[in-house]
Length: 290
Length: 346
Image 1 (tube, each protein chain N blue to C red):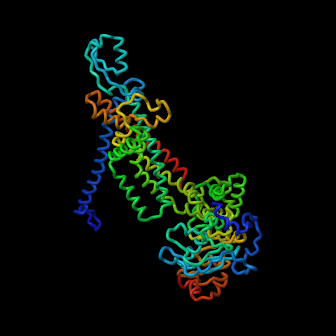
Image 2 (cartoon, rainbow over the protein chains, first blue to last red):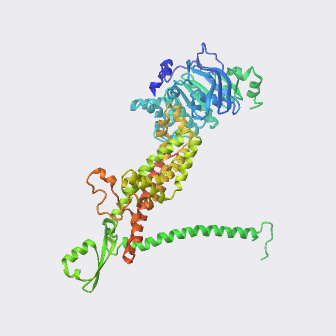
Image 3 (cartoon, rainbow over the protein chains, first blue to last red):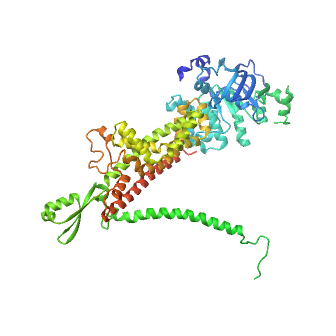
């Protein structure tokens, strides 16, 4: 399968493969607002129409997601935010009858819906954390190493190293280091979700997509995941779909508001929540509808 | 003591009486079924016990489990009634030449044991389940994970369901025409394996598909999102969790494969065979030999030979052993299933 993926492999720079776990966090403390200099566009969504069979879920959506930033997608249920998120690593391919009818999604200039793009390679670069935490019914250790083993890594020392690094990266190491061989399903809801995040970062993706990662968690566990997002934003580009507007306000740099399959407004998070340009956005963020 | 009168006082209304009667009927139906089962199994156990067990140590009639069927010779010798199996009778005859002059009755299959039948049935079950599980799980994976739902796939599913309703004698005749004659395998283990496997395939496919469906979608998505191929996802993160369910369905399959007579009577079963299955000249002959089998042996001893008190012993004894063996194989599968279930709990 690797043979079929030269285009994406060649185009993406090799830089993201290994990063220091404790990279300096320039803007970690004040996410909502600090305009980092010279933000680079990583994902370019260009006039995308998306269909489930006959029904159109996205109408002419265009936005640029910046590298090493947290981008939040907000909007009422069924507005297309999750659909767009799942387009970014082509998880929609799993559903029969879905198609991008118009426009393109480019990651570092490569149109990911082209026939010569290997979806396996794409998903290694664009990881995903799901709404319902889905640790596999295996040990914590096996959960983390699942992705690496798929890539043929069998070196025990290397796997051990990645397990520790990933669990530390997901702020879970101290809680589980003594029971790495216990089932991932024995963890609490919040720990399970952080395990899924650790599993996603273990394969060193460039982008992490999060589909309402906290919707099934209690406030304390939610706070931990949000804290984690703040730590991860220095190393990964994060796109998060959320129903929780405070969450978007707290942890994202940029926010996109969707309604009825259309992108209504996309701007710095601070602007979206304090000074929205669009009346619909204002109505939504102030809680008057949605 | 005055009768209490309040609004909630229990009264025997006609609705209550009707309810009581209906529940009684339902209960009676359930216990009637239970009774039928108990009578069938009880008869076999009680009447088969005389053949399977014996009064002196080791209390189990080992001959019955370890020997091949023989003719029973019943004769008078010096005023005593003697019952001897074929081999023993010949030895006795050689030692006492005067026996030959006396009158002696012989009854086929009424002495010796049923060892070749036990071996044959176990071989048939193991081989056919191996084929059925391989084919069935592959088909279920294709149907559930790869095939796109459409008219054709719906038609395939319908065909599979219909196949489950085909009488076993039809499978027997199909196997006879296809494997025995057309493929030229003759009456053989191989022909029996495939015939029995085809008979249980619909059950296995349907149940395997249900087990695969029961594996949460999150396991598949999570694995794919980490860059697994569909096949890696299925083999590492779907199939292991579906296995307990697949094994449950195969337990039912085992009982059917072991018990059916019709599919093997044309394809694999011999009335009698002197050699045991492993007594073959070369390895490939193993697959092309017919075997004796318990259900067919029961059929032969209860309908194909003259009936008398001596054949009756063999009939009940064989049926008893047959029940034991099916129970044994099923128990083994259940233990295996439970182990897998504990290992892959979710």
